[in-house]
Length: 187
Image (cartoon, rainbow, N blue to C red):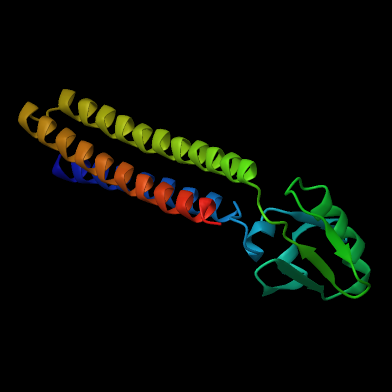
């Protein structure tokens, strides 16, 4: 019985970790005014009939804080990359220079910064919901084990441990939000 309880706690911890990892991945795509190649991670380009990530078909770098430079390995793929970036709704335009692509990142307005903070807040709330769902699933599993013979004292103790775990992860997510909000609002 103890193994099942431990497994239940470990599973909840794993799900909460995955939620925080997913949040970090999603927040890395939200740019804070500085050029960063990770904003292009979600864009797929039709490359010989196969959807391909830009970083798998070109080298990406940031020569300065406001520019992303894309150097495709095959020159005939430039127009597809430019088209994919321009239709991706990221808020900037890719420019074809003949052998490379330049993206100039515009300076964020105060209104746009507020919109980005709202977007971050939405992602944070989704993460918190996911963490709470992991807590609920773990508690439900413990209650099933309680019906199968787990004592009430152990049930209450383990539910308390799950709540402490949940509070720790929620606190971690709040810290991530505070850091990202500060990053976005810093001019």
